[in-house]
Image 1 (cartoon, helix red, strand yellow):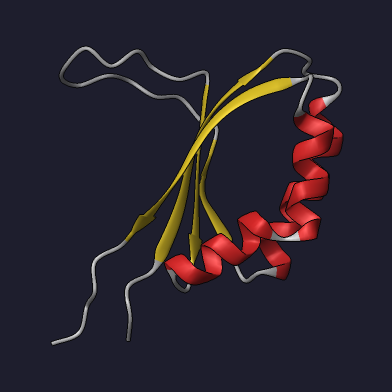
Image 2 (image 1 turned 90 degrees about the vertical axis):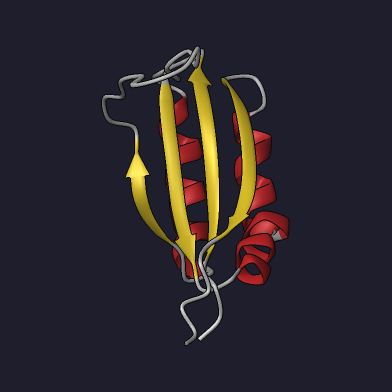
Length: 102
């Protein structure tokens, strides 16, 4: 079994009413590419260091980094990004999980 891939995003929403359409489109794209949300918002608290708590944090798990990138590059997610352009700022990265092979 290969390592899972994770999309991690920090989001700052400027228009809470308009973000619903982005959420609908991005959720459909995540599901289409086999992803599942592990974190979607929720309260956060800094335990150590000088990190400023994000407004919203999102973590999505995929079967692999390759699949996470397929989601990100997909026409479906690019359409969601277009909707989000003026209503939210996002920092996003892909991270490889631990390879649990023995």
